[in-house]
Image (cartoon, rainbow over all chains, first blue to last red; front, side):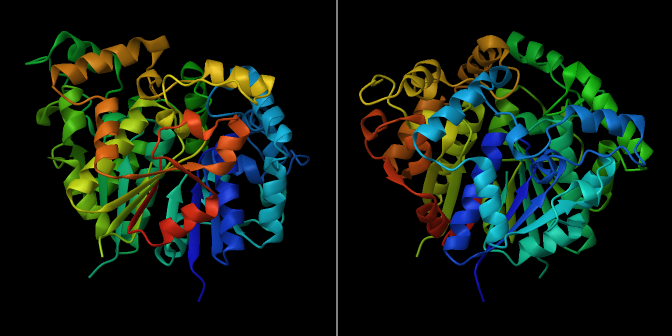
Length: 158
Length: 158
Length: 158
C-alpha cells in the first residue's frame, strides 16, 4: 500500500496554496497518495473561476461570493500583498525562474489524481454549490477528513 | 487504546479556532482522544470572558490584557475581518444555516472532555494567571506537549 | 533510533518562528532528532543579517531582498504588530520574564544540531544565495522534505 499525504487547506492565499500544491505534486512523484481537504478560505482554490451563481443564495452569501477570490489566479499573498503589488512582484520572479504558476500546479495535481475534498460545513455556510467547485471535488464532512488523516503518514494544516 | 488527535492552537482568530474545535468535536464523536495545546494567541480562546485581573501584572501585561480578545466571541477573523464587518457577515451566514457558533463548539469540546492545555511560557510572557483561564485548563510546558504529540495519530499546528 | 520532529516553517513572523524554535529546542532536550525545512517567508529566519548581496540578481529580486526582513530580530508579529509597537511590547514582556529571545532560541537550535533545510524553489524564486543563508543551512527540494517527514513522528506546518 502507498504511503499517504493528507493536507487540510484552510488558507485562501496564493503562497500557501502554492506550498500545498508543490507538496502534493512532489508527493505524487514519490508515489504517495494525496488528499487535500479544502475548508473555509481554502475553498477559493477549487472554485470554478467562471461559475458565480446566485441561485438559492441569501443576500449575505451573494455578497460574500462576489467579494471573495474566484479561483487560483485571484488569490492574494499572505504577506506583503500591498494591494496586489507584492503578488505581481512574486509572479514576475517566478516567471523569471521559469517556475510553474499556481494554476499549473493545480492542473498538475488534478492530472495526477490528487483527491480534492471540500468541507461540507464550510460549503454550506459560505453558500457555495457543487456546480461552483471544480468537477472532481467531492463534498465531505470533518469525520471523513479525520478518517483519511488517521490512515495518512503525514498530516499538515495549511 | 483510543486513537488520538493532538492540536497545537497558536492562532487567536475566530475562524481558525472554529476549525480546531470542529475537528475536536468530530474526533470525539469518532471516539478519539483529543488534546488542544493553546499557545500565544491561542490562549484567547480559553480566556474567561469576565475575569480580567491586573493583580501582579506589569504595565505592559495590563495593556496587553486590555487590548486583546477576551474569550471566544471576541476573536476576529483571520481574513476579510474589515474591522468586524466580515465577521458579522460570517456569523449571519452561520446562523442562517443553523450552524453552531464558536462558543457552542467550545462548550461541546469541554463537555466531551477534550483536554485543554495552556502553554506555560506563553502564559508567563502574556502575564495571564490560572484564574483568568477556563477551569479545566492545565498549564504545561512544551515538553509535555511534545510527549502528548508523540503518542498521537494526527498532529496539527493551527 | 531517536524519535523525530519535522517542522515546515513557511511563515516569516517573529512569534511563529519563536514557536518553531521553542519546539525544536524542547524536542532536542527530549533527545528527538529535529529538522526545520524553511520555505517562502520562513527563509527570513535563516538569512544572515549582514550579507545582503545584489550579485546576479534581477531588479525584482533586489527590491524584494531590500524590503524583506533580514534575520531573526527583524521579523514582525503575525498579530497586533501595529507597525512594530506590538512587537516592542512583546519583547519587553519577554525580557521582564527573563524569557530567551528569538535569536537565543535560534543559536540554541544551531548548537544542538537541529538540521536546517532551505527550500530550493523558494530560494531560487526569491533570488537568495547560499552565501546569504546561515552556514549550516542546506538547500534541498520538496522531495527531500517529504522523505524526511515520512520518517518523522511529528510533522507540523508553521
